[in-house]
Image 1 (cartoon, rainbow, N blue to C red):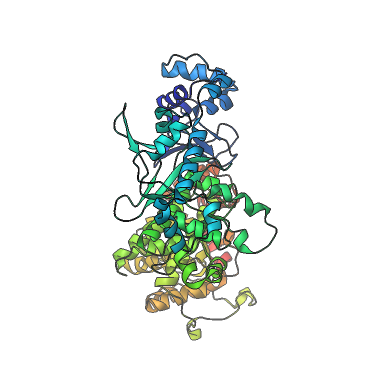
Image 2: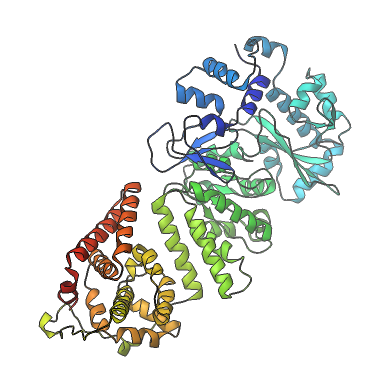
Length: 615
């Protein structure tokens, strides 16, 4: 027994997934979807995504619609889930229909579409269909490939398809339900949807026709047309050529043509690539690449390759795909990209330069982070400070979209490394006379002169401590991310503010010589030299290089606490919250460093440690 498909569709439409799931799971809006912690496996970082008509967990792989959600979350049978949802939707449950009775009385949508495919293929062999066959042959498509992809011709749209299908026993309503007729209004249907077009059958994974695409020959719009949404077909959830992908995993050769999953823009690109031996080519159906389609791709390949056209529209499509993928990127699931020459698409490139040229592009494909940076940087109008700042904001926002915290951190570093490499390239040399190369680790402690302080005012003492805090970051730049917030909140005098601005622009580095080089490239060595030549800061800083990052960070917070103990107390509270929320080694280290610094300041130990630890 089965329920009427129309009733099930109405049930799903009346109960949007966010409201249904929100009864049990705390959801947060994120663009066009909602997210929360998965109810099917324990997790602290949300990987459970809810859309209007389905859900998917990128952690455990749970997936489904409203009916399957109730079945999985509440342990209900299919019939029990239907009864519960019907009560929520206020619908009366219709009488169930026997499968056997249905199939004997009325052919299904698959049969209608299979018959339509037969008709379109036959039309390609008629005199009227010669224009379609000549189009394929002119595009370099062989007879064998035409048969493989079941390419066809729609005819002139004057009722030939309808007569053919009715002759096989299909009703007009069923033909319309298969998406083959134009809709006039809710109750009336017009003529054939496809006419004067070459046709491309769109198949599910099992190879069954579920829809068609058509390209018009001659004048007319739209150039490409797809079937409308039907019970079998949703263009956001399937890919053209997807039914041919089983060959990827079964092919024994190591040739990348047979093992690379390629996502291209159009039907003809897919067909041309398959004909050239690239059997992993698929394409979205007139839409930007969606998360549902990425999920299909990741089931086959952990890093499918995006290869859109080499024009402005293709670059926009690549950027959209990258931004769409960011929230669901993981160390296991990512994307790769091929950048085609300007004005080329896969089909035209193979026609002009051959499959070996395309194979070389596969071998030299680019990483996700590299292409993401390039696409974001292309939006810059000029290299003004305003445009650079805008790009930095985009890079930061892009990395922040990644849900995996460790991966987000690595992306932020990688993207900003590319930014600084482009706009602030490192010099390959450095003034050796400017850096004191004495090995302070090997010198005895008695060789250092005591740190003598004259009688200073409170303002002078505070300035000295600001200088020490700043100098410590010059020599130990690897702790800047952990103290950045507190450092930015300090009310520094103008000479130190300028140095702070440059420190916050630094690319990721652990080498203080690279910091000097960075200041040198900006023409600010005089300001830095002035800072380091007072209060023995050059001696202190060069000694710090031999300290571990943990010890340097603790000492930094010591001086910060002397300068503002109330602020350090707030930092300790915040660090504890961060550690409780993200109980990893990094947050634990930051919390302990601040706690130890606060304890030392309160006990008055720091004044002695200024000489003992640094001199």
